[in-house]
Structures are given as structure tokens and as C-alpha cells.
Image 1: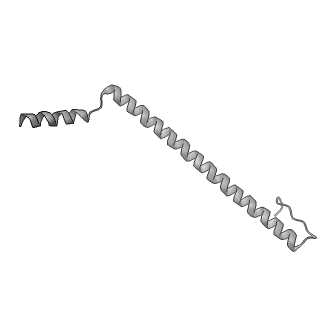
Image 2 (image 1 turned 90 degrees about the horizontal axis):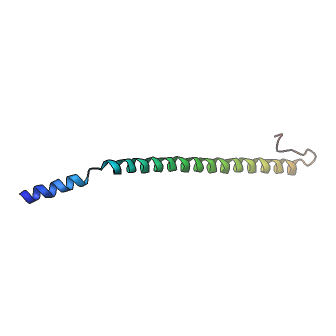
Image 3 (image 1 turned 180 degrees about the vertical axis):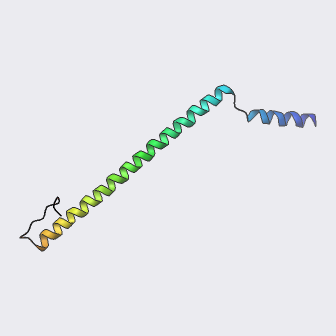
Length: 80
């Protein structure tokens, strides 16, 4: 029984963080959190650019459609 007590005690000690390791872990978690925030911003920016490009292409296609249907009245992308 005494051996089991020591084994259990050593396992419990291994689950505790030492003060110097706790600070290192805190820094690591903070760093990962900041990286995550940057990734989210990059993803949002790329998504926004993708949708802006789709809107621009749709507007250009509309202009081309209008020009084909009524060549006497040229349409410009800025004046839809």
C-alpha cells in the first residue's frame, strides 16, 4: 500500500506546473491566441476580396449584356 501511495503522489506532482513553466505556458497560449486572431483577419480579408471580385465581375457582365442588347446606348460600370 505504501508503494501505491508514493506512485499516486508522484503522478499528482507531475500534473502541477512549476512557476517558471507556468509563465512559459502563459506566453505560449497568448502567442497562439494572437496567431489565431491574425489568421481570422486574413481569412476575412480574402473572403471580402473574393466577394468584391464576384460583384465587380457581375457588374461587368451586366454592362456587357446591356451593350449587346442596346448598342446605341453604351452603359458604363459606374452608371448602372
